[in-house]
Image (cartoon, rainbow, N blue to C red; front, side, top):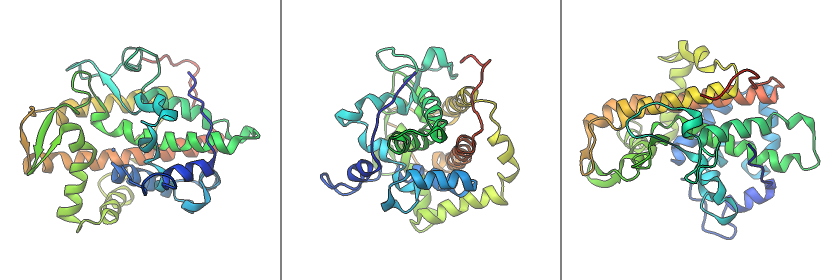
Length: 305
């Protein structure tokens, strides 16, 4: 399994900031990915924090969240079209479970080409950071951005959805008064509605609320279990299994094309969205702390399920 592509930090800055293309359009959504990465960065240990800052281009001033949506921005460009299948997992309709050997492949059947395989691969790449190579910064920068983004994606329940509806993308419906689809509801609509209704449209306040629940709130006692990871293969299998279970129990439940989703759906699903963003951030920090701290995440005896 090898998805090795080189890209300089300067080239990342060139692409993302729209020197040639339109100004930055941050595309979970831009808000979900940014919150995941901010939560993770606040939990980094000094060695990991230093490594992350060394790998980021200077213009973001050490802020990982500024580039966490980069993989979404380039996925349809010719140079990075190969990454498009890495953002999600298609599982058999209504099976409501994840099996790596069965489900982790692209539409052509190429193995390991899914978000679970991508996290395994880019974690492995980052584990070589301290080995030293002449072009280490370029490849490692890309690996850091992809890992950070994909850890967010695998925690968005509809990124591990049913094959026939493309993770809810073809389930057209209305979100309150405007047209949307089920995937987009989970990607962005719930987050934006929460920001508008409870935080004066200030995403930073929403994120602070999530982080407050991590430090001394409803999830503070869960941090240790969220960080548990005997090896990256078993852990990504667990994260994907959690997402498809949530997709079945909360995403798809009682939803059909043409429906209008409003207060009942929003109020019952918002806590799940917030928790998954928190879990994604905590687990991204765990992986970065371990790989940049020189601790292995390999499992010699684990076979993907």
